[in-house]
Length: 391
Image 1 (tube, one colour):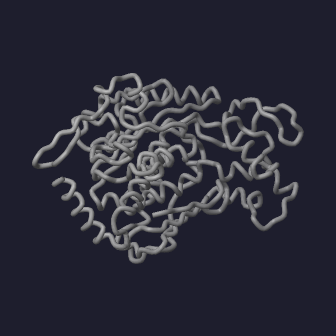
Image 2: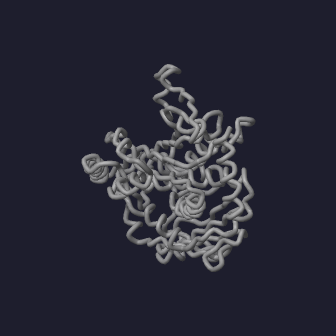
Image 3: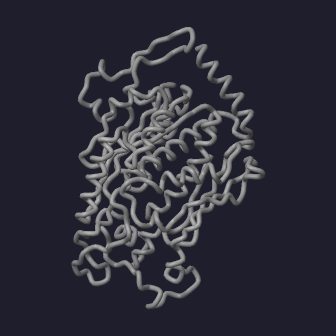
């Protein structure tokens, strides 16, 4: 399985092409739109979410709601393009009139300046239009297809918010949930995607304060996956380790600056006896671990335990109280440019990270088993699960 996306933030369309999805998977635009809606909602999102109503069109690879095994093309129209048609036109020559939104004062923390240097763009809009997090709408669309596939294989996945600024989610509350379905029901009921109402209100207050001050705020999100069999990924080479691929997919997403698994960075303060997951065996389930401090991975491979991935989300670079910058034309000091932005991306980032992990898990399964047809894939996975159980 592989995919690519195309499109600019204020361009007419966002597009993704996915190759390698098995034939026989039932998928509809409503399956994808449900996930796109989750990405749009969340406390701290900006005014663009009121303008856009992200809905997908499936242009190829699906017939009568069933995948064909051929490339799937997904398209999301940018409603806001109506106000940017002349500015973003691919056909018209640049003029003083259609260059009114030219950007020459790069924002600290954004791709503006370095992207301009790399591609020799003096109008930094040529950089920010593609480097914008708007592109993640298509990653979620691709992830929605991956999630649909994983659901058919009895693999569940969910992401939630672990902290926003100084406000921490009480992770001990996770013991109250017997399944990810229960966790999903609770966390999705709060605007900040946390686990309880008191923390939700505190997080909202932090976001409100940042917005009032013209500032932004970051946080941490966590993704959990259940039902993944042992043995996905490999220890034989660095580029075959599945946890490394997941880490790359998370950090390769806008605003993410760090990843850990299980106990993560806290494990650095502990002794080995506190961190390693002891191994047990039972007749009914085969081998299992007595804990999950390593987040479901050993040697770059899944252990069969719950996968736990955390991602650190930096504050959004666009501040309504802009920081100092330098004009790329005159080299004079100025305040940085202001683009319409959210106060925080953390609530959306939980959904985006969830879908990025889903993509990597789906890729690993489709690499390991026959990926031409869903029925054959299910048969092979069932046999493999039994083989692992009997090891």
